[in-house]
Length: 537
Image (cartoon, rainbow, N blue to C red; front, side):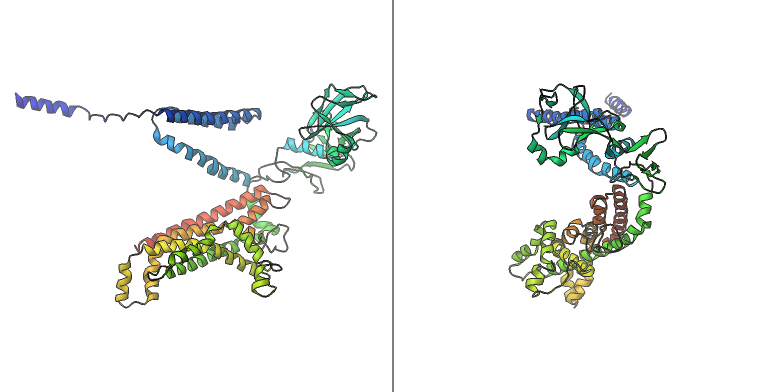
């Protein structure tokens, strides 16, 4: 019986599915943790509601839907029980999408548009802006009694029509009928509740701001606007450029010139004259093509690209050489006070790079700098104004800023090398140079090679030292762009995007994408090459 019973028991056990592991019970949150969760989620939801209201008011329904979905997802993640990995990963993924993925996608989109000064809105906005900008006083226009009011720092125009109606408006706000709180003896409206009436002295002190106020007569910009030059009388101003919606053209009423859509986001006449305000359109690869074919830009671009490679390579080479030399020198076991020396060596690393650039710019000033006047006895050496000396100065300052990092890296790497190999080589009669060249340096490169690659990528985009020391100068001849001999690609992109008056965000984004591709290709090739060094280990 016992044998049958045992067999039956085994048969029953083998026919059953494996026992499921009991689920781990989620420990209940503490009271403090629950309160913190409620408070933080409440803050997130409050911000989200504010953002959603703003998006809805501007009819941005796509972003509204995405924001609503993200808000609901965040609440679902943190209000449900379990899902601990998602609770830790959600903030990082959220900020990654906002500050990395979105920025990259938006920059790519901008690179294929003509977005920049004069092309930053829709065609409808451009038509309105052209009409408002081309305002001229209408001959024999009616005269209105006017009073200038002020509220929250904005100037308003209070006009009294011939029939006695009072209207109030300002630039961008159509004139609306109001009930004046005060009137003059002639019936002119002089005040409105909630507004301050400007006195004569206020008008004198704010004359330019007063004359700049143009209150539209109606929602149609073609009807013109009211403006005053003395603060007491207003006249009708109408655009000299008349827009024909059917023909989609502007006609200059004074010259008769006709401006039509030129297909490039602007109105232009037959002889090529273009109105200053345009709109944003897709231009395909025109920005990338322009970077290499525009004679005003392609020549400086090639010079800047070559100098960028040279600057990044020489910066890595010089800082690594000096850092390694000092690391070997201060790694001797019998050296006294090496802790003090090491602290002194890394002091430049503690200074902000942009501040160091400004300080060195003053020291190297050819006329008033300390180096020329004090150290060189009043010599006239153009450290920052000669193209080649300016490049040398940039490399010298970057060496001063960068060698402490390499010193720290090499010191750590040297201390991790096995001493047995060094001692064995000495017993075999190898010289110090042979030990360094054949043993220490290859082993050192195994650990520091990835850091050298990352240092190359950093110096490829080392904006601070260039912009603060030389500002990219001295400037190239033969180009209207503010590009100079020491500009690298990233400073050139900054100047194209934000420098001067002709900002071109589309072109700057295209250049930024080119830089990204160059750095990505070099980094990929370099990291693949470092695999050969791993075989040394």
